[in-house]
Image (cartoon, rainbow, N blue to C red; front, side, top):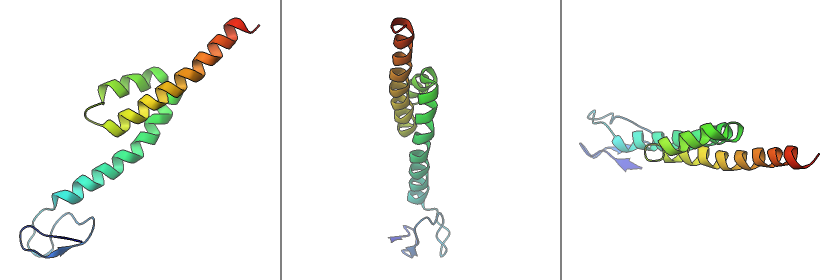
Length: 95
């Protein structure tokens, strides 16, 4: 458990405001943002898997702002690109 920087009262996990003095707790907001960011990476992985070009674009644009989502999108881009490349080569050379 953490304590409030304003009054020293104990804070529960996920609490955004101290119930004693009303001071905002910034660490909880950052923690919630990081937890939500991790769930987005799986969604962007599947987006990059189904649409590799979109995964590449998202990975490049969001690399600094949203690294978890960008990493998921780039991983989907690589896997989806390999799968698409396999089927393209198969269609061209295996008749």
